[in-house]
Length: 97
Image 1 (cartoon, rainbow, N blue to C red):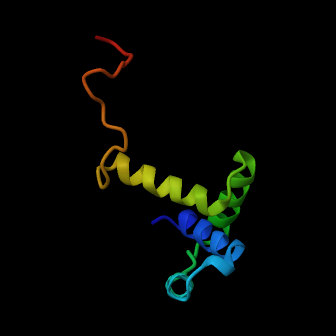
Image 2 (cartoon, helix red, strand yellow; image 1 turned 135 degrees about the vertical axis):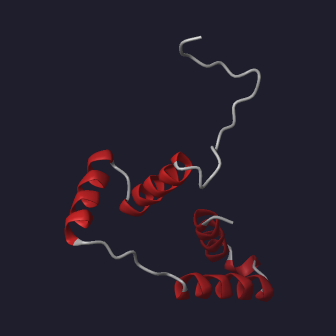
């Protein structure tokens, strides 16, 4: 489950607290505690931090999203992660044939 899905679940439970079971709330609270316990900041040198903050503001994305995008694209480009969208026989591609 992604962090965004979990945030949505927490907000939904808060909005419908009267309908939530004690067990469901306990599970959500334990997961929230685990996420908070495992939050670790990424320490960057001041120059890199400044450049990332400026770029994030320029493209209108939060800095954590930008860093996640940069890291995942680097991992794909260097074959540490698979390409997210595999081409199939029906895909249209452009280029020199």
